[in-house]
Structures are given as structure tokens and as C-alpha cells.
Length: 350
Image (cartoon, rainbow, N blue to C red; front, side):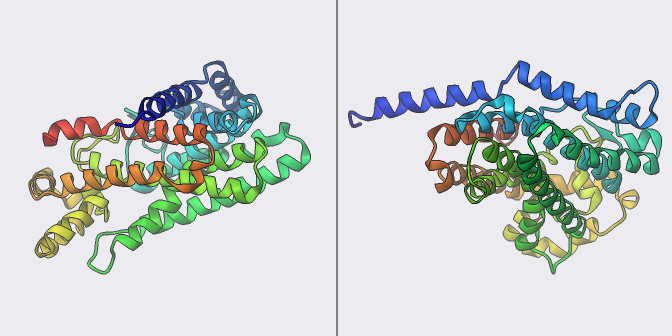
């Protein structure tokens, strides 16, 4: 061990500690929540506002809001300047969740009935549409030039997210689709909403659009990691959506399916037969058998290794190296996003 190692280790611990503090913004996160509540409207006089509040009240980690505030601070700006941007990003994210639940048929969200399951798909769609408009209203307090730039960024990333959802819904399991189709879909659908908070916060902190975009692209990769993990957790955890193995019921071409087919291509016909059935025609026994095959056949373990390898590569990405604080922020965020994997490691005895 050389003499520089303790200093490097101490510096890394300090940076991670700072990043952890940045992701716990306290009063500023409360201001974000207050802004979202204000924009949602009066729940007692407006039925749309009532449904928005019910959805927001289900909670969530507010990771994207935390990321917006922390990025602005880490880049030398003032986190206070990013409060309205953080509220905007969170509202957009929640709009996507309302629409996702309808399209995926998930009846629960964060352990509570999804809006469409309680009020019907039509009213939930209306509520999601309102939530799509509120992010633009959240930007009204910024000076005209900054507001115009943020509106364009928000619209661009929202459009990419919607296009990604189209790709994801087309990811039904079939032999003619593979990893390329998967990554195109999840990069746009899930990755974009991790890059968006960084893009706007970076510009608010003074970065030029090109540099802000490059940094945002790196953070978008955290969204891809999140989706890979989400696919893996489907084998071990209900994910708050009401059914173990929900991706199997839905016939999704998940990362677990693709990993298993890489290892056991001979299972393709039988697996596609199960995944190709309508949800209501798929039995719990069949789903349990597929889950067992994924675990015993090694797909779960191999996907876990891939996620950890990609996480290491992400933190070392070049756009992060220019700022130790931002690099530490990415490292801490990856650590938090992937923390549920500890339960998977226990289940796989690794």
C-alpha cells in the first residue's frame, strides 16, 4: 500500500459523506413538497386536485427532487435555486406513474390502490394529464431566459420518456427481440427521468447546455441500473404492485428473461409460451415455476453481477471525473438506488 492511499480513502469518505448530506436536504425538500401541494390545487373543492393529492400522498423517496437539489449544490450553485425545478421534475415523474399503472394493469402503487383501480381508467388518465401540465407551471418563478431554457429541457425529456413508454409496451417477449430493444426502451423510459433533474440543475448552477447534457446522460445510466434491478426484484419482491412475478404475468421481455435466454436458449419455446398468454390465463403455479427456473438456472445471479459491474463503470465515467463532489453524488445515489439488492444477495446466498 503506498503512502497516498490513506489520503485518497479519507477524501473519498469525506466526499461520500458530503454527498449523503446533499441527498438529505431537509427544509428544502419540504419546500419542494409544499410547492407540489400548492400546484396540485384544493383537494376539498376540486375532484382532480383530490386525486392528485391522493397519489402524491402515497409517498415515494423523491429521489429525483433530491438529485436536482444536490446537483445544483455540488456544482457550486445554490440548492434553493433548484426548489421549483425539483418540484417540476417530481410532478412529471408522478404523471408518468399514474399513466404507467393504467397501461400496465397494476392495481396498487406503493402499497395503496392505484388511482385507476379506485376511480376508473378515464379519471386516472385525466389526473395524469393534469400532472403533465403542472411541471411547466412550477417553472413560472424563474427569470424569463432561464424559464424558457428549462421549459424546452422539460418538454424534450418528457417527450423522450413518452417515446420510451411506447417502446417498453412493445417489449412483449418474442424471439425477434433482444438486448438492443430492451436498452433502447429503458434508456428512454426510465433513464431519462434520472437525467432530467441533473440537466436543469446543472444549467441553474451555471453549466453550459452541452456540458449539462453530457452530465445528465451519465446520470441517466442510473435509471437503467434502476430498471435492471427492478426486473430482478420481480423474482423476490412484490415491488408494491400487488403480485410476485408481475413481469411474467405481463409477458414482458425483462432483463431476467434475456439473461436466462443467454444462458439457456433451449428454454425459449416453453418460456415464450408462458409469457405469450394473457395475464388472466397465466396461473400462479406457472409463474412460480418460471421464477424458480430463473433462479436455479443462474439468470438471477448473472444479472446481479451485471448490475454491479455496470454500477462500477458508471461511477468511473469521464463526465463525472471533472467534479469530485458530483462523482461522489453519483456514487452515493447508485448506492441508494441499488440498496434493495442486499436482500437479493441474501436470497441467492452471495
